[in-house]
Image 1 (cartoon, rainbow, N blue to C red):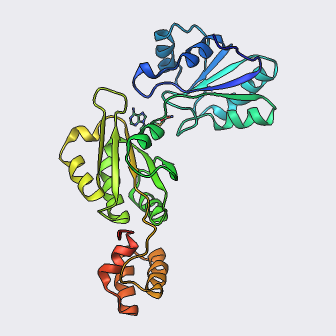
Image 2 (image 1 turned 180 degrees about the vertical axis):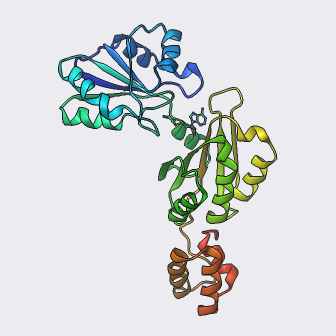
Image 3 (image 1 turned 135 degrees about the vertical axis):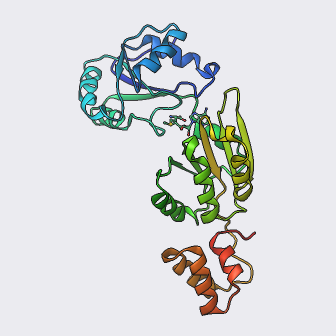
Length: 282
Ligand code: SAM
């Protein structure tokens, strides 16, 4: 049995598919606290039933978080213990809880983690890509324009990139990633992790497009996309000036336009500039 401290907010991870990933400490904590704040009380009620947890639930989602938080802080400061859960995985990772945890700190309330599953970390762990530095990006914008701008802003980032994506948008996103990051940048589709139809497929972005396009099942379920960071080594055959101009123009124009213009200005090969801009070399 865990010992529950009065007046403490426990941030509790729940499974991302496989109920076997619920930790004993999570179950004990949910049983022992006075109240559980849940993103979707009906969904969490099912989980609690499965683990024979009878603790009362209160709803806390992105639309009511600001209103509900003061009441929860009042409960905490008067000595009651509270657990925060989301529909799946770790709260606050593309899930509600930020306002509550922030308010808890401001009120001097102890905030304690009960760690467990998180789709981003699970995907990173099996992606076969560098994990010394990674950037969790979350969901890209659904519309193509803002999504492309986001990818452009990440094009030169050397960190491994971790995205969540809706299944019906995964093909569009991967196509746009290939256009911005280059077709040969490695990426991983991590789908339905811990569930029956788990898929972990690593391929260059250009090939990943075909893999997803050829099989409708790859556009179903829950998806994490992990993309290799930009390589550190400078492009072969491009002098420093050409790289400088290419980078400047690359910030203002499309990769294609920037490559053509840099080639005209510097006499460098258009292909080499293009590859440099899409961070493809070496
Ligand atoms: N808080 C959760 C966590 O810790 O992973 C994430 C919540 S976010 C609203 C839901 C997104 O997480 C899904 O759209 C998907 O991108 C990703 N996800 C959740 N479960 C997953 C799974 N079993 N396999 C792959 N991706 C998953």
